[in-house]
Amino acid sequence: MRDANPTLQPDVIADIAAELWSQLERGRASLVQLFGQDGQQPVSHRVDRDNKCLWFIGAADSGLAAGVTPACDGQLVFSAPAQDYFACLDGVVERAEDAAVLDSLWSFAARAWFDGGREDPNVVLFRFRPQKAAVWTPSARLQLINPRMVQFSFNGSSPVHGNAAK
Image (cartoon, rainbow, N blue to C red; front, side):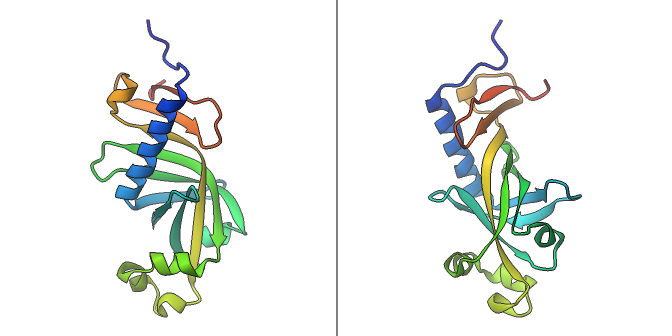
């Protein structure tokens, strides 16, 4: 009988992490929750692979902004648009001051939420820095029974995979 949680080879982890970033780039909707706070908030994230983070815009008068002082441990939950790939990322949510990033994120959709536009004092830029992730995917590379789950860390600690029902 096969071990349900064998150690994965580094090249497999690299492939899984690359697929996670690709999935996050293709689907921009996710939910963010701060640990110790009730409820999740939907966000439209933008991937920044170079800095290994996700960016999103929020409102200064939101529960999320109130809990991030200036940073807080949190979780980002993602479901791919095709509903065949799911991820739960734990990391740090922090307020950020980066006009160039905010300009790159600003859109017609963002403008709809803020009466004062890009310069509205209620606009807050957030950065999510993932530290570990659990991924559920039908990836053939893992050769496991559905649903397949992989947990790994962005800082290199030992990953495991196995049946999510365990």
